[in-house]
Image (cartoon, rainbow, N blue to C red; front, side, top):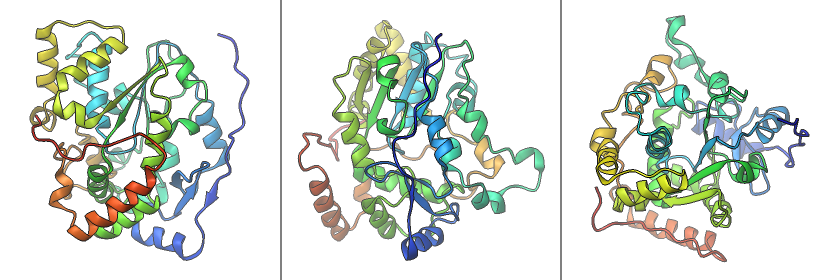
Amino acid sequence: MSQEKRLAYPFKIRPLQGELQEQMKRDFEGTPSGLAACNHWGFKLMGKVTDDLLEDIYNYPLEERDVWIMTPPKSGTTWAQEMIWLLANDLDYEGAKTPLMPNRWLYPEAPAIVDKDGIRKFLPADPEKRTITTNSMAGNAHTGARRFVKSHLPLSMNNPRLLDVCKVVYVARNPKDVCVSYYNHNRLMATHGFTGNLELFMQHFMDGNIKLNPCIDHMIEAWNLRHHPNMCFIFYEDMKRDLKSQIRKVAKFLGKDYSEEQVNKLAEHLHIDNFKKNPYVNMEHFKLQGVMHKDRGNFIRKGKTGDWKNHFTPEMTEKFDKWLEQKLKGTDLKFVTELDQQD
């Protein structure tokens, strides 16, 4: 394979300043370095992120047989990862009996997210359980095997040739449920360590001042490229409404054809009641490593559309709706926030 010319990272890193940065450090104990805006619309990573690291990600080596998943956080990423991996690997359920990450999927931006200073106090005393696998998750070397790569970064921060070389499945989810799910995730993960309540988190979410956010700009960027032949754009809500149809859609995108019986079996494997019990996707090893709090729930939570209604007050809903309407001006991207029926 010919050596590609290394590209300069095209954006300036801009750490948050003053009292705003100090608030980020207080509200997110897992990120004592605060946050930095890292692209043209302010996508946030940890405050210590470097140009060299982002340039490495921007030049991540690509192979035609690689399969990527791109999503904002808490948009059904893990659910879709399991579906994609099984579809691409001829429904190898035995091969899926190993942790989704880092064994089966790579995560290039992991070193740009984890502020190691912030989680040292959570690490267990046993040094053998203290492994933080950011470098092994990144895995940017060519291995010879087909690679499966997860990214929460927007397209503008990944290799600009990505869509021209690799298959990319993009999953979008309605922002209300994303906000509630990400709130719980930021409390669960020591790498985030959020200390406040949902109302405060929602304000940070709307302001875009949370790691791996803002999410609306992220989705609009991908939505505008949804017709590219190497992109399969799906909605979390469509997976909840009719999982089998989305399985067939992604299978076709990956050049696979499965029988009705095989689709039914995969849908059963992915059903949320079974998925929550699957130890290979529920990231329990993170609790042993100190990356995830042991007493704040599990990585796979409810998996429901419309759960936001159980958490937003009427005042929060009104505020969020006005913000979302403003964010979506000028785009035809729309979201489903409730379903009459779901699995």
